Image (tube, rainbow, N blue to C red; front, top):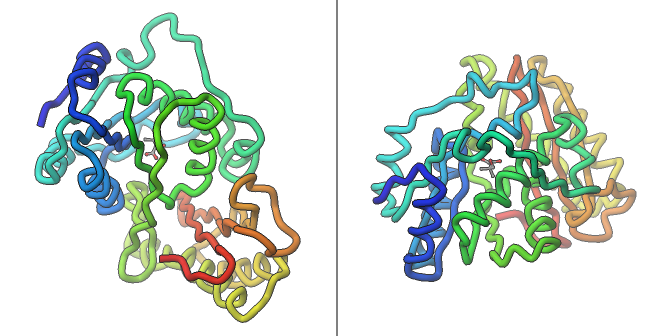
Length: 283
Ligand code: PAF
């Protein structure tokens, strides 16, 4: 595996790479969720590039940029074992050199949910994703369904700007008790970790009532709030039952819907989602 830290070298490597080329963008501290993306990319491409870059642009001033978990040595070991061809590890200076002043802003779908809770977050995500795609020129780019709104935003971005990469979405990987894997789970104390599966329980409850035929979106939101209220350590940010394409809140579940929520446990914000697709269960 080649480890590359400069944009110039990455552009060169991409030009010479065997195609198709799959890109797995990450912020490191890799877990099984990331590795599911890497494995899928490995199955589908001749060349696999994984980027590790803790993108300062997508963190708000009160957020956890300084303490975001990092373990580059372990990450590189995991990527080598998964037969990744190139690990791209630029630093912030390399990605945002002095004078940098161009930003990518997807409107509409970024104004709700996480966009409302984390102003500027998606502008940071879409700017870095656009740069990574411009540098690596992937045929396919891999994202996890765990960050459901990010998936919607990135699909919109690549469509609107004709970025020429296929967006491949990989199902959320969960712990045995349902907690979606996330690098931020590392922040949870033992007691908080025991409380954290409440997000998944609340999504399961929404799916259950939906399977029983409930099509009133507010009834699903109410069920979800009820489950969260039973966990004393959980503080609800939002619950949402929204159109899976536009993320506009629904009154009736009459189309593909993303059911999502954000919950704070201690100091840690956790998010999760499922897609209800008109009869089928989520994988
Ligand atoms: O999902 C993430 O880890 C990040 O938002 C991404 C896509 C790597 C951009 O920094």
